[in-house]
Amino acid sequence: MLKNQLIRLKLKSKILIIAGSDSSGGAGIQADIKTVTSLGSYAMTAITAITSQNTSGVYSISKVPIREIKNQIEFTSKDIKPDAIKIGMLHSSKVINSVINSLEKIKVKKIILDPVMVAKGGAKLIDNKSIKIIRSKLMKMVSLITPNIPEAEILSKTKIKTINDMIVAGQELINQGAKNVLIKGGHLKAEKVFDIYINKKGSKIFESKKIRSKNTHGTGCTLSSAIATYYSCGKTLKKSCSMAINYVNHSIVAAPKYGKGHGPLNHISLLNINKKFK
Image: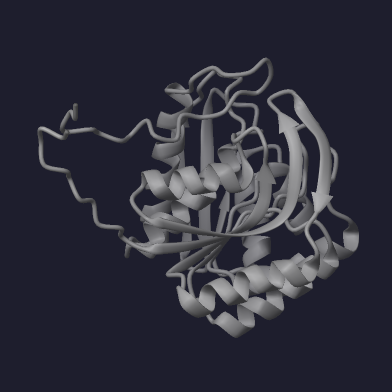
């Protein structure tokens, strides 16, 4: 029997996540759900692929039929309309076009795109046709795109070796039609991490201490979902990026150190339990 009264937490917003599933729970849909939930919002999903993986790598990938991806997005949104959408890995040009068609139907304004295009080892995860559609169509539809440096290089067709190169690449993406860009600087060889937010009004550099850790599996998924959650609750995009970066850094420091490879983050590291129940 509970000795104390239950604390009723009110959900702040509703987030639809369009991404792949990670069986190890560190990235993809699983990381997205944990992030959205721990930050106080309600997570819905449209799964684009099912992966068998662990902290050491991916064993297999099973694609979800395009019709089922479409049904997940549209049927879910028809009943519970999202306040924001987070998009992760879209593994083919047909999937990307289908998602674009669904987005046009459900008409949600706040959309965060994490363009998952390059594996940790550097290999491209999608083909050139898919990249072209992201660049020419999808990138222009979303509120914010959050590429890491290799992805920003592919989308902007520029080489990035310095902070200034990041700004130039971001400006090129804005010229191509992106509304807002956050280039993640974790790949840059520097003593600190520099993430750069860019739009037509200017740029903002977020500077963080570089955390020496192998427990970074799912950082990109977590960051974009955190941004979507903060943004859906009324924060500005710039403020949402700042808060999300802090959340990810805190989650890396508090990582549980699971697995033999790149371990997951601790997505609930910011939760405070105010009362004990027996």
